[in-house]
Length: 135
Image (tube, rainbow, N blue to C red; front, side, top):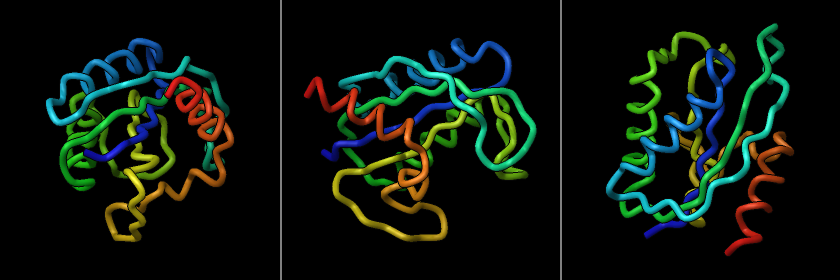
């Protein structure tokens, strides 16, 4: 089992409902045992595009599988909302990022761990602190 941190973000439609949908879908994954969920926070969009503000939350849990299997599961959940990956940094109903996967360090074409955005997204750091305060 690997301790995982997953970030969820939404800036289209009912953002709170999309975050809740993502949490429900992740909780339903049998190899994932969700242990904590942060309070959602609103953040400004990254990437320089003019778009609505994001609502973000993070979960921690234990995953019994590979990092690639978790990534594929996250992509399937995103796809179920209509998400496509045609262009980076665009608005979306739901985005799920693997922020940390145990102590794995990985720099591959499909997955980098920890997530490279961790150093630039101070709200992720605050959410990790919130999750770790309860462990």
